[in-house]
Length: 171
Image (cartoon, rainbow, N blue to C red; front, side, top):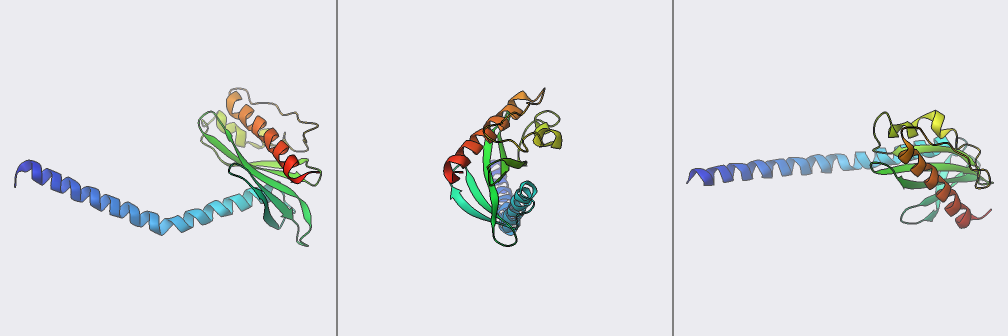
């Protein structure tokens, strides 16, 4: 066996072992990862609708999901809309809580890949609390200096989400 053939054989075995190891890790952790994503979504939805005890899908499209938020007596108290915005680096996934009058009860970021220290400021309470109490009729949120693209993208997307929610569930 030539030296080149030995090197190719060893490299092939290393690649196969690596691929097998990676496959086993994925198989053993995929359910846990999915459960963690579901838990994070539930936590975010509860943070924007604190009185809600249950969330039922009301409208689902490719880019947007509207959940009916229900209290412990199974009475609808509002909605939670899940959507995303195109940020500076990548997608910003978020949820918006709405009361029965479609006024914002809160906004929570599910995930983002924005620049740490700049675009990541969209996750800070000082920025997110600006949305609370807004509706399509009184929509006024200030962008973040130094993170204009990320914050403006989120602001515009939340407004679009309010429009979609209002057209889907009415008032």
